[in-house]
Length: 476
Ligand SMILES: [Zn+2]
Figure 1 (cartoon, helix red, strand yellow):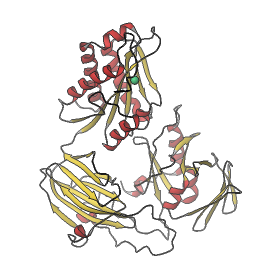
Figure 2 (cartoon, protein in one colour):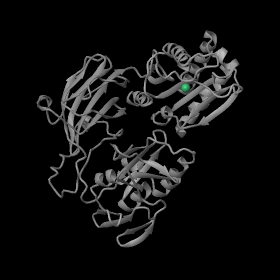
Figure 3 (spheres, helix red, strand yellow):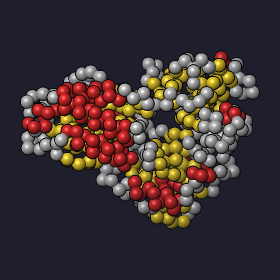
């Protein structure tokens, strides 16, 4: 993944980006990366308008050291970067670039006080190359080198770099007392401890929240964790020899732990686990906001099973007065126990009892655990004559999983085939992995309902779901 290999031409991007937006729904949860650093926009999210990804302009221009200003009376946005001066007017498709008129496919708009601009436009005139990754619904942007760009993160994506020098940056970072064009994105937090037990890697900070970017690299096999906006505290700093620290490992799969202040600007602590053979990580929920922990173990695929509804949210009321939440939980638990028989799969349940879990918590549970798949189980409701199985997905990368689930569940349930459909249910929209919601049958239909509360039927459907998951994950 050398930088140059990523660089597609703008032409290719123009072909790729609109094709993603063919679906009726505008997909949400687009991730933005600049030189592989995740950009976080708290107020507004990137989205797709008329086939163009529009993004909050401020986080991008600040990231590349440009200046942006806003004139309220003329509703004019001015972006200045070196000798490039761009003037845009909200809701106008005409822009001035170095004094010359250019037209935009999508006019800039204001959303919650943020100017939203087409990514393609920004790329074209600010020298940013980008690549669309449909698997993760991410836009990876790369700033072309220019005179005042600093040497950044070093061999951060260096599968070809087999030496162990990666724990330290290739050049000493610049002191950064310069032009003042660079706006630090947020404050730097002190990392206070790095511990690897025989199971888990646990990293603590004095404050702030820890969200690393993680890479698995081979030759030699290692897992690299970069913690943005962090620096080592004195106790860890003392352990550094030539800017790199080393900790012995008690973990059966890990040779040793290395760490460093990988870059000072932006402040990034890098932790590397040198593996004995192969291993995988699974981020674990933590009790403390300023702690991050991952279990390190044999390679496993993580599947989140989501039993719809729960507690005060009973879901649909069936034709005989039973609750949807009971059907979903019973079936989900059967899927869980079937999948747990396969050691290659880690199963995470959004709920295992009659608990109320808000939709967004189900989503963040799956996202934070870096799940590979998400499946939500539901029972449908409409007028009594409607019967059958429906399977829903939202993001294009979930469609293949939806097809496999649907094929298996339809065969097992024996109800009418009401097809795979696209919808914007929150749990399948906001999740970041292939995510599917299956409506096994209609609780409002006499025939469907009487089957759906039978143990043998639930066993059969659960087996079909487990088989579909394995089929999709290619686990024979
Ligand atoms: Zn439901």
